[in-house]
Image (cartoon, rainbow, N blue to C red; front, side):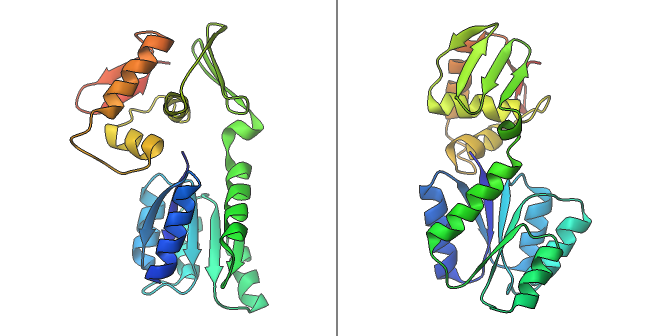
Length: 220
């Protein structure tokens, strides 16, 4: 599940974007000022940034410059109420991947978001991702273990895909909740542990290793 950071200081527009993107299967986080946008985009694991140019504190151009100076290559779609061609060009030349001018229809923004994510998604260029005997095809959504097909539910598939996109990394329960279920944390939930158990039954009992006090890691 793709994670999108929304940097927008107009509460109604931020809520509109949040609801629309979530209803289309994305996980979203909202920030309302440039400082928070810059910090979260650099320090958190997001797949795309929707960035308003007119943010308080640091404007969108400053945020964009900081991200690109830090070698953060996450796709950025800028939002601007300014119908000035020179500013659109400045945004694109500053490292933005696309722009949408306010007011806009949500379908236009959604199409641009999908296009940028397709361009960045690893399994679009190389659809089959492998780890040991496990193979996952991102296009056909098929999984096999040692050449034998394995049937996974949508949640199981997304969880396995998350592990494969973070090779060698220990993923915390909170990270898995965010990527697979779309919310940041629920300390009382054991849903991650339950689904790790499901994957172990289908992929092999040693496929996913428990790292005590830290989370889970795909055994590569």
